[in-house]
Length: 175
Length: 173
Image 1 (cartoon, helix red, strand yellow):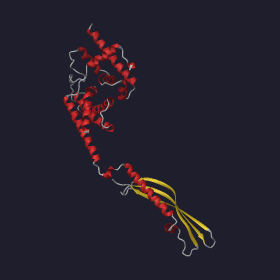
Image 2: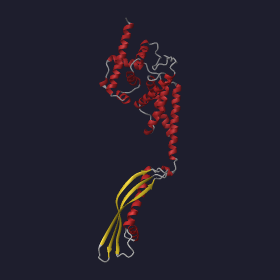
Image 3: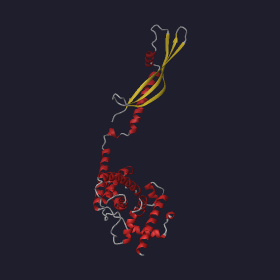
Image 4: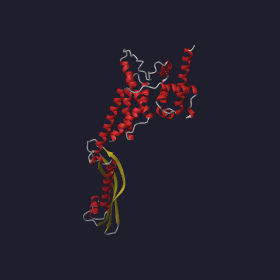
């Protein structure tokens, strides 16, 4: 009976947050498969963390923190693997972008996706957590072990950079 | 959150970014997650059942062990003190262990007492010879005998310090 309650709660939690978690994982992973593997690993770790809390589903900041550590571990493994297979050429599938490609026709959306992808890691992480992760600055700060003001500043810088690129792009297109 | 309020152009950009929503997990990955959750939940349930099914001896709380050890130690100490401080035949016997009056002595044994002067605990001892672990307690005991010379009526007190070492074995589970 208790098992069913836990399973239902966790599946509900995952269903509600999978897109957010995926967005975060994807911006740290090289491929869709890697991002999904990272979420699986994070899920197992989160379950063990939550044993002390009666196996209740975790809050989002904790989930992002765990996902970040999983991504770091994954990154280390990948870099080792890549060093071993240095001769192999990796082709990136552009459809496997971490943002939705259903708006491919929208030129500005496509430009924006590339611009977000080109942001520095710290700025991109805060932007992802705020826009698609559904966290407040307080929660982002907790998750990234920075102050809320730093989180807000990074978010602001990210938006300003994107805006500048959009303006430049707009100017170029319209003469 | 007015402190973090953005200018109008950036608010529009925020809306634009929200509109390009990220993809979700693939169906295969979601199914795998659900299977993982089921496995974790079942595994946790099994562990709980194992805990409940433990034999009675293994379910005893850890504090019980400490309480038992303390009770045994106290019991032994009080027995020792009671045994040696009582002025009965037993104490006389104990006194004779220390002072062996000469057979033709004119001294009369008035009193034989063993006093506990101090206590030290060596803590948990794990012997290298493979024997069982135990707690070791050292009791500083002062043996005191009082005797009177029949002829002169003089009373002589003899004090002899010694050390009693008591070991309390740790129960193996």
